[in-house]
Length: 235
Image 1 (cartoon, rainbow, N blue to C red):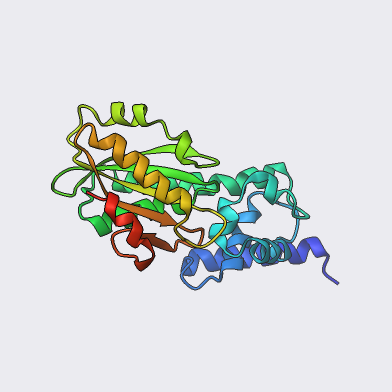
Image 2: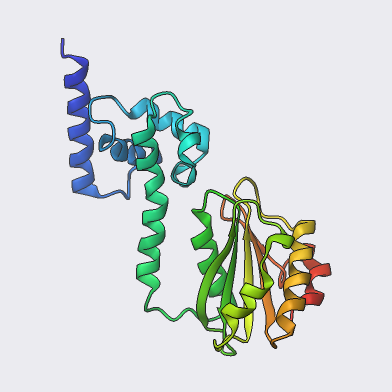
């Protein structure tokens, strides 16, 4: 009877050969994660662990954006594997940034979709500011808060200094909630009001405000019925 090690080795070879033949198009999520885990856990069956991780975190995106300490709570995941998996979210962000480095991103919807892509892989609550010019072209973007985002923690003076000397006429603010669906909350209303008041002193307005959920769902002040009270602050 073949040993467990021999069977696992044969399965690994077949999965690798399938990837070489077909790419990832026909792979299910657990097959993709299993293949990735081969390079972190060389001597063990990773199929059951791949299923367990997806059940716990919901998707590949959820696995990659999970913090290492969360991953290490799973049986079979040590520090090396946890950091290996968490590295993927950073790699994806660098890859997307490189692809978009020379791309002119223009138009409210395209800029918002860019922000959603950037924030979707953040494992912690984050606040992003995107600078746009009067042609609605994205000039630059900055993460100005990570961790617990609150209106009082936003450094308005630093934000004004960042804007000075640029061609930005407006900003888009994107607030990422990593543990739930996108929804507007009281802190968002306060955030819009306080940032809008600060930016008016240098003639810069808020073009839109976006809340982004963990599942990549998002709402914008400009289009969401839930945001009627917030529109007063957009200029």
